[in-house]
Image (cartoon, rainbow, N blue to C red):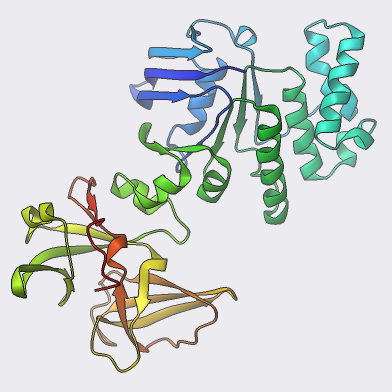
Length: 379
């Protein structure tokens, strides 16, 4: 296996369209890195550049410390699995697994040894004589991964490999990919638009948007410490609540968060936040950090229930600030509550925020700071 490094890499298509801009990213030997982002963000282009299917416009691309910008695909020793299984329909599973090894003119005993080893690793030994049409979607994807593995590549590339599978099968095959990576110690770069796949699979997750790397970090750090508004809103299911707000002065020299016509005093705040008084900001709070205030209390922010989703293990309550009939243009937010909680649309509900989970973002989208100085239970 090998390490991978992108050093100030640009990919510019005809007409000056940037698919990748200034990408600097190092992937360690044996690491599973997941690239995630919306459609058109450049994540698949990252794989195509690494595989040699696209040429780097500027910058350097290294595999195992060697610059590979001008090496043809067959000399890069990378293997790629696509969304489409791309199996040869007239060849058995064994024939599909053997094909890349025959192209490299390996001895017959070595081909047999590699095929049987990979088939056993992927639990496909009993499928070796079947044709692709006799396999399920999950089995076909396993064959596609096996065909890449038999080559013993330096880097293993996966481009949306689970997109054609149903939801249940995706969970199963996703777990198999994670186990496979741990057993083989392979360097893997996995591309997906599904942030749940990214958060459950990756040693680290790289978030891209419009060809620019936004943040790369382990999943927990990405979730708890987003560096900007895009990452905060993209990572999480449901995503982080984001709404326009201001910092205003409060009694006894404290600060308050103003949301619409209501103010929520902050029990503590980083000293640096005072520089942002009365300036337009975006506040962020994770759904699980939105709390329902005790019945009958006048504390917290008054909201109206606009929608409810009962999911069995949890209830998602969508609320809008203000009493029933308040400005419908006000941004609604979601509270994630454990268990089955009964609410009806139009109900009045007072909520509080877990103040240690409050984020503020400036007009340029950058995070001001995570409110680590706050330790009180709520607003």
